[in-house]
Length: 190
Image: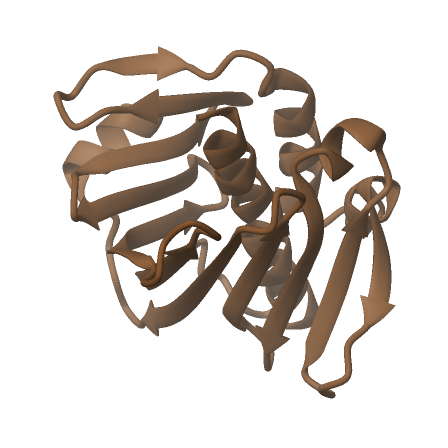
């Protein structure tokens, strides 16, 4: 369970940073919400087929980040006031213990501080021109994740998380234009 939470936490760090880097390069953009859908395949060494999930994500520069799994079970991980939260399929919300330190890194990443990423990861050029590989610097992070690959143009289109135990998560992102954050999600982030 901790590994799953760390994987989501890395997504919360990486995806917003990619978005803010794009926003920073286009300062005339006043768009503060980036939203879309994701499809995720989780490969376990002991299973022949991946576990598939899908859902929605929202990044509001003022409110925070919300990653909602819709299928197969409705749940969410979100950043609210610098605290990492988890909402289970029953609607129960709780703080994720140990997420505070990395949540601070996330806040810096959301604000466009690329040094926050450089402090936590070694940035490596990937074989493909539109990809970046990241290796965690801290031993505690390396216990969970060996490498992260991010591919895409101005916005990440695919993210691969390679876990130290040999499991792998592949995520495909699709973006929606002119979207408003649902009121129920906005209320949870406020």
